[in-house]
Length: 244
Image (cartoon, rainbow, N blue to C red):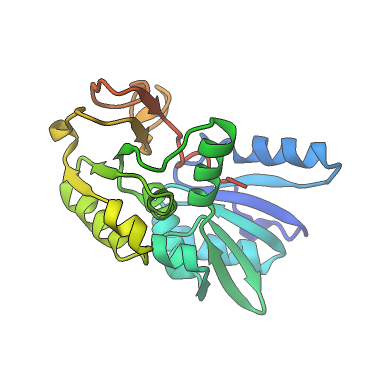
């Protein structure tokens, strides 16, 4: 679908590459149905080199909100002239809109993720030891809110250790209260170097948990490494780009 080919009003969409895996149209459609709203929501498949053009075409022809999913979240942050504080902290944007003739960006990944964990799953993050697998745009979005919940320890594992280190350093630049800062620890490891000792929960925030037909890789369950941890949660944020 090319957004430049339509000028319909009140349109919403998610842009990604690939994007066929995204549940956003279904989730937003169900939400609209429950509230008796008409909410056209589509998928836009755009390669990285075409993302600027497709975002502009969508927003300049009446598109109201545009979600960004893999691999566009970091790039979406650069497209936005104005970014919310949490988007600035994350260095990634998952929601774009046109306002006052300028593109605005927000990141709802972290707020929605932590709300889902604490409210819907009853998981308290304060004082626990967490492993995050992944260091992409989705992981960038959730790290700040996770650290804000005052876990005792956070470990970031990624196939590319340099990206994990970059993410950790960015997260540690976030302003913390003295109480949070005094409790927070971190470690950076490659996936092969992960140790399960004393970890309470594993968050797999990568495309490695994809379905077998997903170009990102085969279905490997909750975590792409063998870990003996009490809880493993694969909240596939590169698909779930529509957190409340």
